[in-house]
Image (cartoon, rainbow, N blue to C red; front, side, top):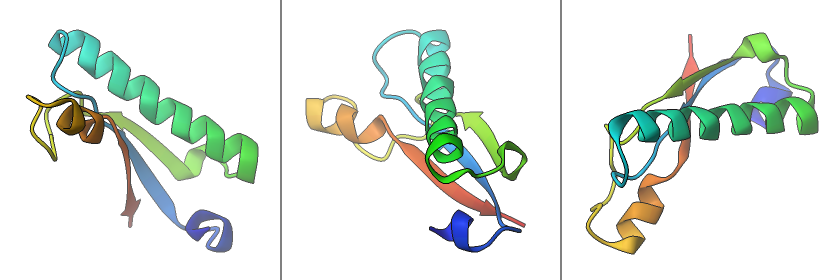
Length: 84
């Protein structure tokens, strides 16, 4: 809703992964996750692509313990950050 109601706002869409797998695989998975969120916003809400920047973080910024299934699930996420 923020993007739809504020046409001048730009966001970074950050994709994240859990720590299972190689660093390269996690980076690719996180980038795909962020790209998927961007495509959804474009298709569903007609948000212009140039208002969204995609970044994959891999497993570099965990928010939970990767030793548990619950923690891994929390680390597989997309976050939005408003850009200036």
